[in-house]
Length: 369
Ligand SMILES: NC(=O)c1ccc[n+]([C@@H]2O[C@H](COP(=O)([O-])OP(=O)(O)OC[C@H]3O[C@@H](n4cnc5c(N)ncnc54)[C@H](O)[C@@H]3O)[C@@H](O)[C@H]2O)c1
Ligand SMILES: C[C@@H](CO)CCC[C@@H](C)[C@H]1CC[C@H]2[C@@H]3[C@H](O)C=C4C[C@@H](O)CC[C@]4(C)[C@H]3CC[C@]12C
Image 1 (cartoon, rainbow, N blue to C red):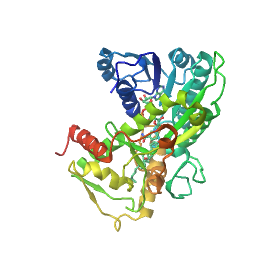
Image 2 (image 1 turned 45 degrees about the horizontal axis):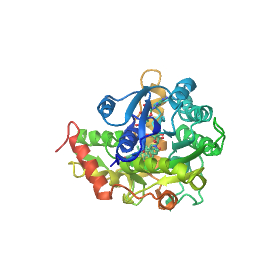
Image 3 (image 1 turned 120 degrees about the horizontal axis):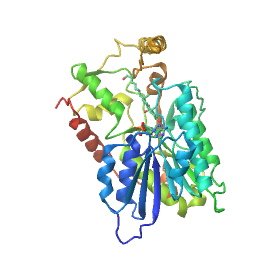
Image 4 (image 1 turned 120 degrees about the vertical axis):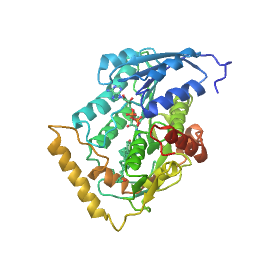
């Protein structure tokens, strides 16, 4: 909890502050950053929940803006001490065009960096993604790897391409002179698949399960491990590293950190069942009914349909060749780099994370419980 004895003098800006992760970062900052005086929340779409935050000791400033517009970003950054850049277009389903993904994720990040340089903001945390590393298109497993594990990162899909480019820009900007003559200090956090309260894909799977009479069908072998991390712990890592960027600039500046916690290593579907199971869904084993070639055929068919229907409507199902490849390739991390560099320990145990997520699923409209 914030200690009232600390002097409140810092201004933070969170881009994408109304998204799934962004909202958790905003709430975590208000709870756990006692030096905060003003919190600017910048997003294309502002959430109504921001209003309830405006009554506390910290000034919460909601800024409706677009990261692709350099002047809007510069105006929001001016006077901020720290920027947490979490805004991004998260799309692996073909909803947005590759050009739009590039504009938001790459040009938007360039705009944030330039705004820091021009206005004299020294500390920048970038929300990157495990996808800048993999899984690669060759399906190579990344089994409990860390930030130094060699891996052939090959990107073709617009989303991982854009995140990799943006991350590189952020890391290259470390040490650049900002207005006033001091160096910019940057770092990038790479969450694996985030879960927790507000996770849209979990919501989609839950509703799909309800529509299918309380069942989901296993499509991915249980032996394929997929890295997951609780949103509260990802938010906590952002808050901690932002705080330590100043104190440990030489160590943390220019570094990348995977986001990790005590969440167990499981397949994507088995992991989801940790929450959906207690909410009344069951996972039906279908390995004999749905072999991999059939899933791939369905995924390719979905991609074809998306392309054919594009002039008429947006058809963007969860299953496509890319999502199937990601879900079907082991990618898990095992590291303590964040603990060694800036003292990170997960704030939420696995039990807490699980309980909170289950409570959120249960509270959803149309719950099976
Ligand atoms: N969800 C995951 O599993 C995951 C994993 C790793 C990394 N990430 C990264 O975390 C960040 C947040 O992801 P999320 O899951 O919360 O997604 P999200 O879509 O819920 O949040 C992104 C936010 O960015 C905002 N935004 C999008 N375009 C914008 C623009 N042009 N200008 C200003 N704001 C804009 C959106 O309105 C949204 O509120 C992203 O950078 C994403 O790449 C997410
Ligand atoms: C084959 C389906 C049958 O049940 C399952 C499809 C699941 C996919 C929709 C998801 C499997 C892995 C997810 C991705 C992963 O968790 C990491 C990500 C990184 C992040 O930066 C953005 C989101 C995502 C790409 C995430 C998207 C959904 C999956 C592909």
